[in-house]
Image 1 (tube, helix red, strand yellow):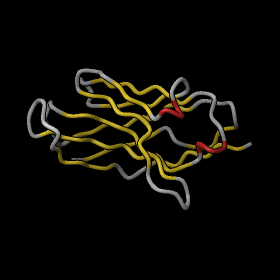
Image 2 (cartoon, helix red, strand yellow):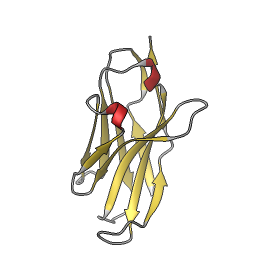
Image 3 (cartoon, helix red, strand yellow):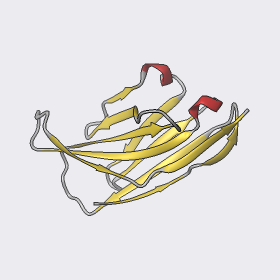
Length: 121
């Protein structure tokens, strides 16, 4: 499985960024795609996740500012980030979870290389 992440960078507080993650090398349709982030000295945390059917879930603290979406035809997941704050500064990682079958809670997880997002005050 290969990942191509893009869209990270430096932005001022209050600004917006859109991250993209294109995945190739897999044809599994029962999957979820997610974004995680890891700030310096902190554990990696889930930002948002979207199922193959489009259902989404977000970290409570980010609801209303971040939006995850996907284009199944392009095997691409997006993260629109608005009203960015300095505390959003982190490396953002794309994640693919391939489930063993529909309704299963067992999956194999794959990670992108990460893209840096820096929000200046």
